[in-house]
Length: 367
Image (tube, rainbow, N blue to C red):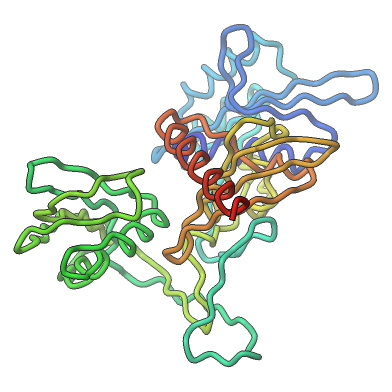
């Protein structure tokens, strides 16, 4: 997908785009050789304004020296307004510098107690066995509970080769449920039989699960790891606070996203937004490029743009342990919510997915 730093920067740029009518907002712009995390341009009457924004995704609070360096950087480019955003807050010295130089300060945090499903993306909802046909979907999110979260799984083959399973949760779930062993089990069943009790919050440990005797595994495809004789699984287990999902309906946990709290540190004004309000992509889709949305994680290929309509191929989305693919169309104005894929490894996989998807579609048409 994308790194945490880029994710936060795109969220801040999206907030500016969603709250500033008529503004031109860009992410990661280079101006005269200098990089800015977000740039806002707008016109008021006959006047043109430039806002330059720095975003820091760090555990420590921003310091006075960081604010001073940013002030110099923005003055060199004659910005009308400088904005500094951090996930961790500001030291008292940084606030003094900001007030002296007219820099706006914001914090951006995620409200884990306010989870929601997107109104702009598609979700796979499955009715649990035993639910009545006329029963309305019910989804309840429980209170935070300490859980043993499996965040990495390494496959150790009998040949000595080691391959890591995808660690994005929806991808990991799919391959754990669909990768079969010779004895009929799937990897998910093997992992669930292991004992991960006693994990502490924030602590991690590595658990080895031997496969005795070693046996061949059969993944549903070879996009992430190959078939081969598996000798053991090595799981990185971390103590995390998780929230159980209950009700008569199954929905992939990655479909939920937290509300965003954007606070002006100097005035105390608070803005709350949801992820589906933010145009994280920033610009309209172009034919021949790959895009994604994060909640739930869905990868698309833009097949064509014609007469204000985008024609998408949904080529990869894992929800509730199933792979979803589809072809669809959409008004181009909504394409600003789709983020361009830039990671070379991911692009390589998606090109193969697209080729296979088109091959399946072509085969259906011939029949």
